[in-house]
Image 1 (spheres, rainbow, N blue to C red):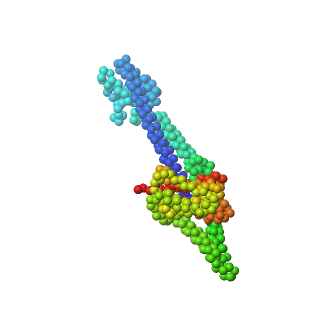
Image 2 (tube, rainbow, N blue to C red):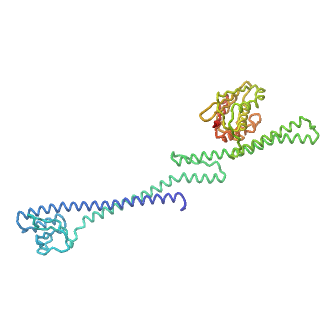
Length: 446
């Protein structure tokens, strides 16, 4: 539990909320207190100045402090605090409480709130809220009330934020938990697991990526099963033929004539090619395919591949055409491997092109790459099969007939060889209009 993403997310967000809300509450309390104190101080200064002016005018009119007691009492009622007035010698002449009249001011009273001066001579000192008498707690009560309210608001806001975090974390992490459950079921072998991707955020992207991965794994698993069946099928046909011939020879039904020997040799060569293809494909997929790269004239490689299949093409009534751009630069390739790719593509075209059709090999320069295409006018490939034509043992024709696609390794090997050279290969096709395979080869740096 303590190591779960939900717990860590909740703890992190709650700590953020506590720090943020606590910091805001502390700062707002201090700012409120300081602002209120500044306001009270300023208001007190303005009040004392008004009282100072009033008492100064009183002294000017009367010439002394006689009868000032009633005015001081009125001032005390206005301020709500105890007010005392002392003359120039420090004797109290008026007290809003009427208790300290004719007594001397205390030594610990400090500076007066206002000093009344006449012709440059101090004639009186006004004291508001003397130290030995506590003023009414109006201001302090206000601060306590405001601070208490601020803290209460902070607590309510913090709790609301925590509840909101709980709801949001559940909403955010629910898809993650669904992904985890689906992944564990996939680990147990159930590749049918999918998750619902309803949002367009990162979690939704993750769910869609997971579904794509699951589709890929399911397809790979299907291809693996098909590969096992295909390998068994491809091996069974020549082995059955070899076994039949050998048993007939053992039983004396047939004699070891050259025709029989040639048939056995052909079946053995078929097995040998299949094993070689599987070996090359395994090396290429493992990144261990050996390439003897050097600057090569592409025209010679294309001519050699066309020469190898010309007899078959002529026998099938299919035309072969080469359309290479002039002044093509040398390419940095292994000529044997690229020749193998071209022969595989030509064999594929010859298999799916009828009599009277044509296969064209074209090439032109594209930036730092030479783009080569092999286009036929054959039957074409269905749109649903096109994304999988480079998969090993994949055949658009499910009949597994060697006459309609061989073992299904040629295009897989072609893709691995081209990618080992740093290029890319792709297929474009339309049913009834033919197929075009296009791949790129790097230009040699001389």
